[in-house]
Image (cartoon, rainbow, N blue to C red; front, side, top):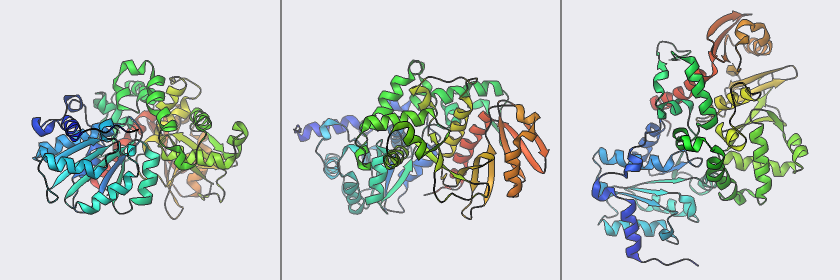
Length: 474
């Protein structure tokens, strides 16, 4: 039975959540935090008023969505916006239980003596805690023409599903993923280890100390996907407790898997653990079903949910002709954040047997921060290429071989399947990652550029942010 709170109690809570009405400053806890690079992409959407849409900020738990909202509020104030025209509500607050979005909004309007005609900024955090939030939010967007609405939520699978069902034309989705390696270095104060050379189009990022960069790369792989974990030695001493309790368990148990027809949470958890252990490996529905004893249709549902919840990414396979298979019997699954694996099992060292798979997972994780629909891996009877970018006409644009080894710089003849793929599709260049070696080789008509995996990983994240800032996508 819901507890009924008085209007005065609700207003007092509202004042507590919006200290800038009096101080013109957000809480010092949030003010001291560094901006993620993604803030540069998100903030213009908060301010955009040429179309009537609500911003839906979504992503995995603990990647900084609430922090980013507070930082946006402070930037609005710093740019001259009246602090009393900005209101923040945390929907999970017990005092707001049973109160609709519009009722909360009207209490704010009444308390701050604002009207429907004013230019206001309204933020609803953790929106998934309100039943039928998408219907209420769409109504607000249609009714309050001068208000800018922004909402966030961690139940990513449910948010995306309901946004697609009810928010078409009214919501702008912005996915905030786990940290890129580029962001990890920036947040931890090691951004100086990589310099930018705009004259070098192939590899614009350079480092004076590849050994130190590699050391930080493995810290990123084991602990670096979440801002708090990246900056806290105490959390890194027991990442399993932090990630499993605060992130994985809540996604698997609380974030509405029933919307995807999932009712056996233990079975879902077992499958996720299996997939996490085999990140970067080629799998099949038949093989997973045989190993788990779970029906293939059920496994499909689980994978759909885990992908919508931003825990995994399915990468599909093409053949040596760059064609998709009619039946997607085989595929690779990557964790969206490599530190999920170390939390479930144990931190991994650069010399471990599975090190290559985690390097591959980290690199794929960078590409998941953008429209990655054209990213595949190629495999045929006698060969494989780790990453292939294919255009809408099914033509390969570039390919990449991900290695955690230096030997191929001295033995390019061992890259024969990569060479076959490049020759077949008239690709004159390819990148091959290494541990710590740089180099360029012409071999059998192919120009190979060898780049340390850590620097390549950084460069991808750097380029994705830079390119989207130059060519914003709304």
